[in-house]
Length: 439
Image (cartoon, rainbow, N blue to C red):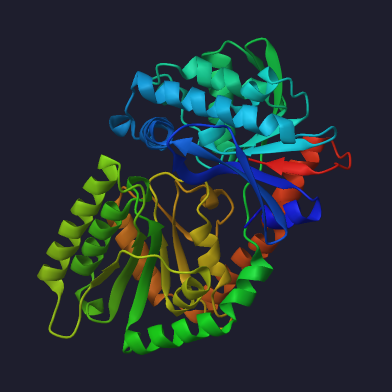
């Protein structure tokens, strides 16, 4: 969504894994046109999918970068698969790159891609943007090949992080572990230098507001309003992932019910949790735990005509979600660690300006660096989260409008175009490009 308009504007190419597997790797690239964008994709072997995607990307890097060292799996076959697939990507991508093109690589799946492209003789400017947090150096050094992984980033011309916290953690590693140096936006280590910046990703506010005002969102809002039956709704919308703090959120909501008996039966929590990575054991475990916690809380507090938690495991379209957001008095966004979290921004953008809801936001979501007017909480402190929910539910309209107005001003100033233009401007050195390639 964030890159589609830019790729159309500059006749760019989107390159990546097709999501399909093949019996034997051929290196053949499939080219298609989708919504005005050229899409180049590559199939992977089943071994690649298991070792690269389910393995190193989602069982090693993802948990480690989200501060779950206890869930990180370090297996040699995983790191070998990660290196092999990035080399295959680079070999397939290099022939598509022309003089004057620049390449913008996205996220933790592709950290070594620039290094592999350099081996293919690519000398174009290449930027890298990390959508997830960068971990503290003491955590990163638990990774057996941490120096190799970090060194690969120095083949980029520009590295972008979501937050100052992540940029600072990267600098800390460069200086203290890699024995490099940091001078302003330039960092040097491993015999090379790279420019580093903070580029918080934003929302396409105009597009989302239009979606929220559309027929589908309107129908979903009306359906939710009828379902409320005069009650207030606290809403969580997340991918089903241990980093989202769903179990801690449910326990905080249970604390809220215990602390506020007068509000019981006047409120319910709707948690939409979209299943993901269901082949990974840690995701199977979190789903089982959430099922158990939900059942216990509902069993303890429910009455014949009221259920305190509605827990839904399915996917909703963005325009459907816009209507659900608008019907919620409280948006509960409490990840234990998150690069940014656009749900927080979508919730704010979907609100009725005359009668907006209140955002309760984790201090460990990247969005908290920009959204001071939300109720910022520590998701590990269930009493604090419970208190914030109670405050949000009883907050008067004038205060809700004041906070929402300031939050919306911030969303407009730092929207997706500001994010894109800031990064691209720095990557290309403000020289007009021939086109761009996003990976």
